[in-house]
Image (cartoon, rainbow over all chains, first blue to last red; front, side, top):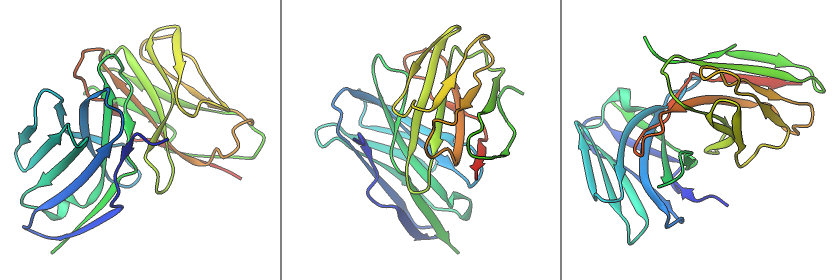
Length: 112
Length: 113
């Protein structure tokens, strides 16, 4: 049973606009959430994370928002650039657990 | 430069043969992991290890085996018992600090025919 869900398999956005990626989780024990970016035939690279004691974390063009009551997080990319075209994975883990559970990924295409 | 090296990048095997995928890290990380990626699916955990000579099954361990004889190395063997072995395999490592992301290698694409 998938504990981390990304319900949008793809997203197309114009260059310069905002990309919003969504992720839902079911396990209330999750307390650390991450976003990874992946290009084809490469390993995922870590993008940004947030712990459950916060509701927002920002790093340059990337902001992650966490809504614990709704068990929902989102990643905002502003402004979107062509190099942002990739698959984005949401991941989560519990406090005493080092392994991550991943969503199925969202493919982002940034149009010129 | 520190990192995780997976080799080879592409691997082809005949059905019924065991095959071992290599994973080496020089990040001095205690924990290492093997994930599998299939089209349209997220990464699924096969095995993980937090200390030398100890490892635990992940969500899809059937048909796989691992060893952790050295901190730097965590090879994965795909046995003939694995029903659908063709996939993209990813190795990762992390520290054991409470907030610590996984760092991934560039993967091995295994094709079994």
